[in-house]
View 1 (tube, rainbow, N blue to C red):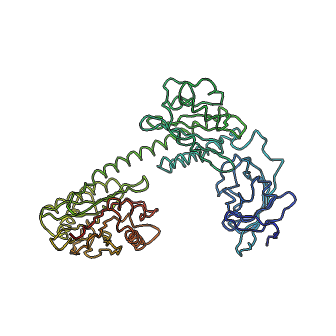
View 2: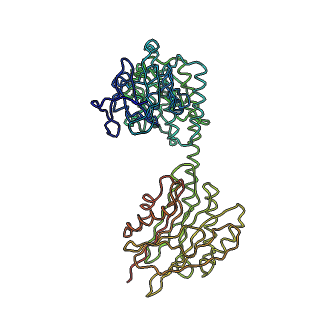
View 3: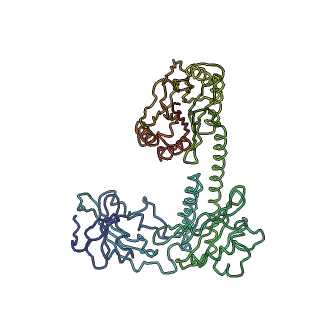
Length: 570
């Protein structure tokens, strides 16, 4: 079908486009969605019924913005009857679905969805709806009231809580998921206070559900006073792991017995909460923090049944947060170990050197990337960049072994880099734990009256980049051979190059240029372009700037980088 429209009454999308407004029906609202479910037209009556202006509707996903379960919880797309016609391309109608209005209340609706062709030529759907007044929940059943939840509903919520919170080992993500689980189903406000590893308290999250949106109040977050050990006040007891408590503003009206009580008085004043549940968040070994769920706009007070539900949710959150904290603690230990394994750069007259290391952006990985530089027995300078395959503690441990063996072989005599790396390859292939690695070993020597000469070999590693003082760049792709640890016999070669005065040599690992969404050539071109623009930047900050600008946002790998600036001619 085609949708009639009134050219005299344009409306706006979120991007500022002017669209024709749908005509009004007697008591029904209407809106038009495209094939992605985005609202592209809306009628005046729909604005009035939904208590939302067109500017808040146009360009938004209709399901995410409007469709809710009967308790106000976000409705999974698989359970949304109104989405089925969008998928099948047919018409459907029904009643008993719930829309969330702009004032935060629910509206039960009868509806019809039918496909139509948009002015743009694509297909969409016309949605007609009207309010079922006889089925509108009375005021005491405003969204979030749990009195009408069946035992099956509560069990389903707890199961979803467990599945959702254990899906991540990141503390911040776990906190965000916890907020989404309790708001707006259980209340308007969620406050999460965490005990720090140093023994302090931090108000990590204060979130408010209003107008269909989650608003984070960072002005109410931050460090808290210490937990008083004798205080009978609810939050202090919860942070000591004592018990869950029903709370109202009157609980904190008396003279405060601690700094935490003062902050709680302010919290109730600012948020307008008239009822709240405060429950301890307990981990396996210790108390992790406290969860507060409060109601300001929702009129019903919490009951003992609500408190038991919040306490059970907090217990599951404690297990998830405890696991996430333990994982992050282990990650920090591994990262610290890896940083301590990386060497201090030598002081070489005339040369300016700098090294940078950046761990993987997520807490899920520890890598085997390393850099090294040391003075050889004959006075030349060895430069090394390498990467042990893998992203775990085994890779970090393998990195330490390979790095130390390479130092030992290089310092044993005056041999060419290819000979040293060939000997290292033989040793790596016979390590107790199967290990493979890539590496570049270079020998940098100064020849009187002739400048600096580089001799190198490459075992399966990305080629070093040479940046001249005028911004010209080239990748040193010569001397390339097989990576280490394969056990396959190979003939390694050396390459040599006289380095121009004031040029910069950049040795890096693949985390700087690799991305799952673009080719390796694109990553190398990006590195070349940015390095050229920074040709005259001081070496001390060059590595960090290159990592910040070149490293792909979607690369979940660590990065090691070594830069060397060749001096000018005397």
